[in-house]
Image 1: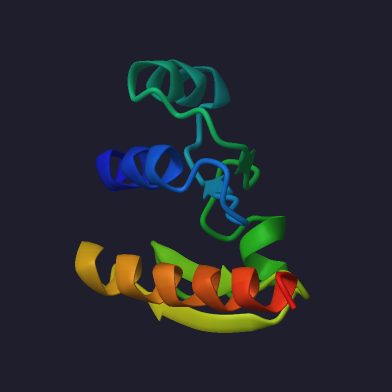
Image 2: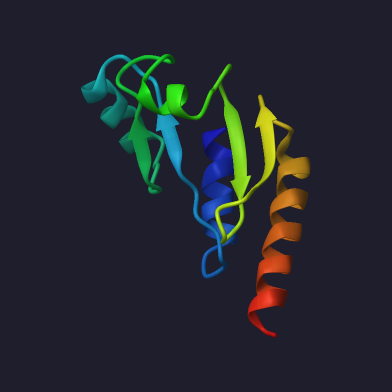
Length: 106
């Protein structure tokens, strides 16, 4: 999903959008190399080297990837276990961002 995530970060620059990642890779040093290679510029948290780490436990993650779309008030608007597909995700994000921008302009 890295290629699509990179495209989202670029396309939505300047919009009310933040991408956060959680990684469960066991070797943190190797993970940093992958992040450099894949040009991951967004904040990405380490889950303690396991899919059963503290972040996934707190958020009740049952599978990877799990995607949450959270609005500016911290309300989970969409949750996907697995990727919904690039177009579906783009559509959901665009709709949510349009709503946030509309509310901000009032």
